[in-house]
Amino acid sequence: MRNAPKVSICIPMHNTEKLLGRCLASVAGQNFDGLELVLINDCSTGKDENGWSCKKILRKFKKETHIPVVYIEHTRYVPLLETRRELVENASGEYILMVDSDDYLADNAVKTLYNAAQESGAEIICGTERVYHIIDNNIQLTQRQFAFHSAEQFTNRGILDAWLVEKKASSFLWAKLIKRELYLTAFNELPFMDCSFSVDIPIYFFIAYHAKSYLGINDIVYYYLENEGITSSKPITDLDTWRRNCTAASTYSFILTFDGNLTEPEKKGIQRLSQVLLVNSIFRLRNQVSPELQPAAREMLCEYWGESYVNRMEKYIEKSQSE
Picture (cartoon, rainbow, N blue to C red):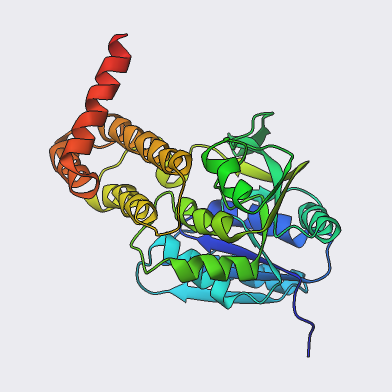
């Protein structure tokens, strides 16, 4: 009987086969004993440059490494928030490291994060990341970071405030090693949610709310592919894709009605995040949604966010652009 893993690397995957091999290679290259890989294939139909499906790419990974694998294949659409919940529930490591399938880990990322956790006793260890692009099938690294990050230690309610109030931390789950029990506590607060956009925010809200200790470190542990996925600048040509963009609205309303004695600065922080997301959605509606779909897409946006809120943010945009 094998020992329980120390760290479960959890990867949700949907039509990113062309990048999955690089992601898995970075997992295979970790110099760390006690890893487990948990991967959910969410109805993916893509192929890599060799014509390989997700399952075949993973089969090669299993053959070439000794890392235990838990593989789950969805046969119908599951919201990303629920996929993340399923990943954690099927993991068995003491810690969870979320990795998006189009990103990849730095060398020794797991060891760096795990050692910091053992030395500090922190439930959340956050490393830094660098943005990368793919140009002519080649990786182009940048010196830019995508997320807010401060190499500090926070405890108790200060963890939530570091994100919502002080802006010293981000809600992104990647580049963070987090105790699995803390994830389970967070998901216990969240009902089933049809949410596939900005899903890290509600999950991290409850992680930060319940956590006792957080440590930020300066080590680069993660490489983030910019301008891909649902938040990319790609054209939106169907309303189902647009609907997934709109689903984030329900998570903000849920958090704001949470009976957790939130302070006024914390509530304002949540409201600020919702405003930023809605403004970005309005720009996405205008610039990415096909012109013939825009009337229906705006109506859908109003259904999720409320027409008065959408009108207010549109006026805010117009005022900002005229100044």
